[in-house]
Image 1 (cartoon, rainbow, N blue to C red):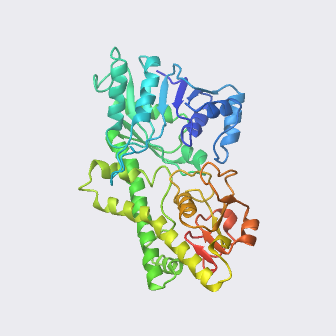
Image 2 (image 1 turned 135 degrees about the horizontal axis):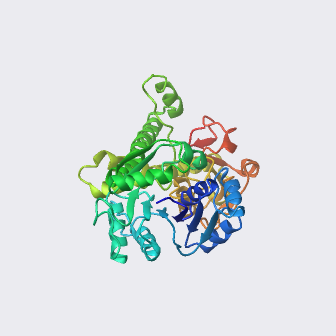
Image 3 (image 1 turned 60 degrees about the horizontal axis):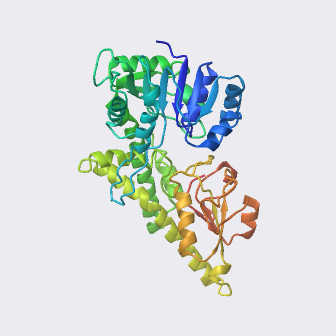
Length: 419
């Protein structure tokens, strides 16, 4: 069965670009989201997120009639689920993945499923999530057969295909990057590859659903461990009075060494989250991955302690000033450079903690965001020139391109991100 109509459930940072890429190849695409603002924005041919080039593609797709957004699913030939996978609010040492959004998405499309459909889970998920999704679909539509019922020729094929893109480069990487296609059966993988080849120029590599789920978690856990090494190294160097930036530059001259740059922590919807999916399933075995998570999660508190120390030293040098008269400017709030994404951002968490812990006047410089009132109570959002003029203490948290004139070796700047 050919794929003439594709439905994408979840129109966020991954779902909307994916929907747009199918629509750009003249496929009829129905995007579904529970956010009415997102739906209305897309139907105007506009976008509600920041991603280079995406606005033009969405505008063209909507104008030409290939893309529309709705609040409820409609019949289609293929369904792609790209919804969040947060953690349960149980305050445990090891967070437990919450699959409620995947379950809700599965149950929302179940009424419009028909024989010959393909359902692909793109949401980054713990191992076994695709099988759970298939079970929820079966529960809702017992008259249809799924891969767990008929391994050869089910009515509905099911697969997992994790996104593997970098925010800020999503449009290009969706097309160019290889895709891991994990079908619940070889036939499910085959049909999924046929669908993705609509726009994917990279290689589509077939495997099973569990391996595909683990592949994405492995990629981001590897990054997390590498970042943890750099972050731990920065703390060690601070104690030993060594310039970590110079040290890493020297070490990286070795032909087989590539140490990453340290930062204020790790954020985003992938690297800060995905390793926990492995740890939660295998807590006794995932010792290194667990330790890396703890190292990266503690880094924001270390940064805060260094900011407090800088404030104390400033007050010692300027006894005529009270703490309320000290202005601290933090540069960057997003979880990585040159994007507007605040999900799990350590920089934002640092600002939120500073608001609660210190009485100083606080300034944020974030060129990719226009309003911060939703996240911060008493921090002023100013442009770089205003902040430079008013700040007593400058804290570089995220190395946006606008900050390239700043020097990480300047003694007046607390640099927790490389430039």
